[in-house]
Amino acid sequence: MVKFLAGLKGEGKSRKLIDMANATVNVSDGNIVYVDDDIRHIHDLHRNIRFVETKKGLLSNCREFVGFVLGILSQNSDITHIYVDGLSNVVCSICDTTPDAEELKELKARLDKLAKEENVEFILSIHCNKDDLPEELKSALI
Image (cartoon, rainbow, N blue to C red; front, side, top):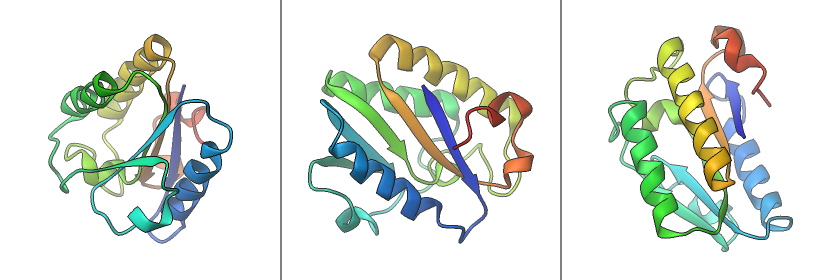
């Protein structure tokens, strides 16, 4: 399953994502991964959550991001949840304020397929107004 947490800068998306990841530790029987473009939140996460830092803008598009996720999953078959803080910062082709609709739809489709195959849940935060998301993604908002 793929879920999106959308909102503008300063609306508390990172805090909510961290709280969700920390709460998942108590109910998941597998491993949890938290991906962020910097380490400022590393100490806010439960010690059992695997933190993965990407450099801002390291990944050019959603295809590269999916490859990155496949690399994470190939290292551990017990991952149940992957949280991504600031998808707009991690993937260059998804810009801040107005996301690229086609890029996001492609990403969701690829991650939905991965979620089913690997039995993993993806929760991604994105910097944008909820109304700017494509209609196909609004059902995945939390």
